[in-house]
Length: 241
Image (cartoon, rainbow, N blue to C red; front, side, top):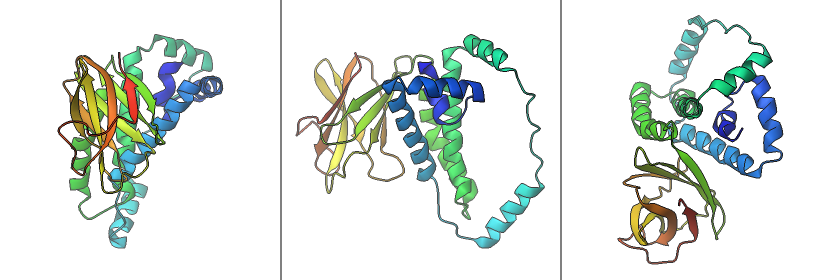
């Protein structure tokens, strides 16, 4: 049941599976927390590429195309018992792949939700921007870890040893003011910078490579632009080993 958190967060489960998982998260705080953070991720990915409407004429034309475009027919209904048997046969990696596809789909929906004159360019930019995220989420050995911050909020780490990549996403951290939050990979006790968290509302996340040997991911408050090494003690740690 724990592997269904991502699909549940983006409404990618059948009605029967959704009901079962809803009962599960009422008793599993870990999964409930993961669902909340994945929903926040999906919302941020969509918001990151959304724009205010700039042309009423363009909006009317797109809506007219939507009304005239034939949709795919609905799939034939499947009995709940068959759903359960099929779910048991689905490999874990396919769940991550479906979740990644749904998250990227939500991000791309943000492009069309705020239609702009350069919509095609925005779409291509969004695809390029979130492709690494989708690749990481769909990795068969991807693991999701959570940590709480000493100053409020927290963070989520998604790490794949096979890809040698990691993603850190902040959750409700207080504003750093005129300073920056910096993410560090601790390897053999030595911190290595993974990058500075963006301050944009659309997505406070950092992607990093070369994560082999990382035992923890830490976050510190640093001068604007970041530092070559930590100048303050970490207020958030996520242990990966």
